[in-house]
Length: 186
Image (cartoon, rainbow, N blue to C red; front, side, top):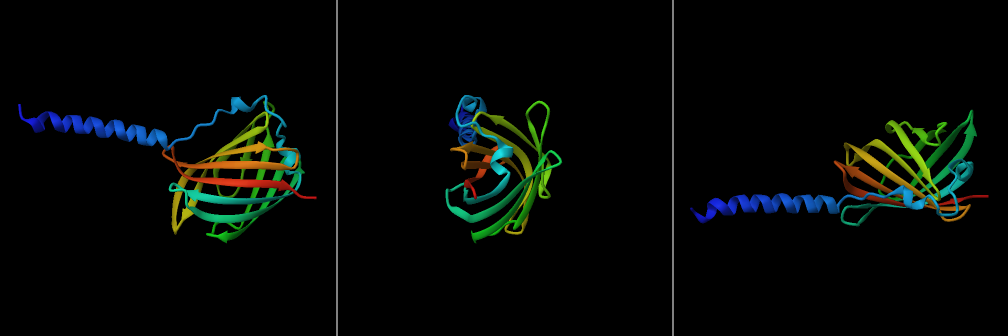
């Protein structure tokens, strides 16, 4: 038996196993149940009813900051739905300048959200001091549009401040991360 006849299958097996471990390391999974007893309880409607300012960054897979932005959010309750009118200003990079969310709470406590650049419906669920929003978006990157999944997590720090962490995924692999600090305004 030639040496190359058994080395080639071993090389393929090693490559397959390494690829699985590489991709598994690029995935993030947060268990919301870990936050159900955490305080303060995050109440979506209460936090966003009024004016909120958010400061954020987007980091690519290498950790480089590719966007820096401020979002002015004007929230209101209309006909039982939470309306978030977002205006974006970019200090670095570019993206949408406007987004309007309509978010409704279902009888079972989950949420459904819609916005013009969201594909289908965003699905939300509260977990104590955390809130998770999951949705698809057609994201424009350098003139090319990619359909990506957002795994969007919010954590209440107190009644006026919140941290948000979003994981932008393609094929289950985190391609970019968004970090946002939000603060209610008087």
